[in-house]
Image (cartoon, rainbow, N blue to C red):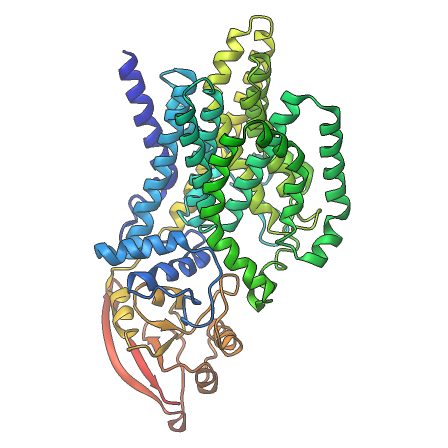
Length: 578
């Protein structure tokens, strides 16, 4: 019976994962198109994969294929290489490999939960973390809570559903902290196996530097806070506690003026300095284990870290803009605490049980994760100023994944502590009620994602656009009613577009003028020529008609017909002479 229960736990966890990341678009042709769920940025990322799929491996702005790309893009390169080798389209690879990554995360954490607790139902618990919400349905009437500008707070489902590099980075971080928890819990096991676990954990976090910057920041700071918390708990040194607290106060007091001098991204080092005394003590006591964790992390993170550092040192215009473009995206402390209450209560339940059971490593893991979550979500206060709301969401996800993975062990410890059993039961009951209430957010998310649907990349219109955009290296512009990002997805073409938060084109002023003209349906010949466009695509189904004079030297070059339920239409490729 135990084996049956164990099998059902793993199967149920995978089914829940598919409900979270696939079910909203399961009947929308999700393998043959691109999800419309906040697709503006996602399509821009997909452009990197599209280039690689067609054999273009240079680190350049992905649409125009000019200038430099500093954005961590390893995952999109993997998608593109997979597409290049197998012939499977980028949009299909995005869906399949992304879903496999999330399923692997939940299965891996399920194994760790099982090994820690020996409970047959333990593998189910990490999957539940995907559905924990932020009370948004009750507090805002929506499935996410809106803050200033475009800042939002939502549960893990809101991030993992995108299946982008951020989701992949969180998968790697989630597995890394799970392995780290198990390595510390099983200290009596052989030194070799423990070192392998630590090395794997360090490698996973190091790789995230090349995949998504914020997940790298989250992973590194979480582990540093974990190590510091463990030293504070086990060493019990008044000097260590006072030093750490003093450094924390100094960071909040003087972080902003320091960041104004050294830059906002380098200011991340201030947080690591806060943890440094505790980390140093742990490293000193366990030098071999620390080296096995840190060496893979540093080696695998170094390509992206060094490249970005050189770009910052050279005052690259894009990087200068990027590190200062996150203003007014903060998370008010009380708002953040309320939205994170379900996960915080589960975390508190785990800490209580581990303190009672005298498991300092596991207690420190939760304390370090929560501290990092709160501190990074306030990064606009101490000078880092890098989209605090996104780091809040990542903190929620990582703390939730860790807490739910450790919860089976915590339940066993809490119920086994006879003197504290009543207090533990009270805590876990309150946490359970909060989690159940927070689940109300997921149906709203499901409806939203379902309504957004999928844009087919294999229908007649998409094929016509892809054929029309094939112009032997000529820069292509999209006319009214045609999405420039979608042109890139379905063709091997250079497209007159840029996502200013991803990378900048070489001729960016002219490209930006063209983007504005496209958005206002006011594309003029002079704008096209200033952007060095060689071909323009228009759609006869569009109500907007562009007019060019004979002297503009913009003439129809080729027609590509397509069929829809509404009738027959044509994509026209116009030749734009210099």
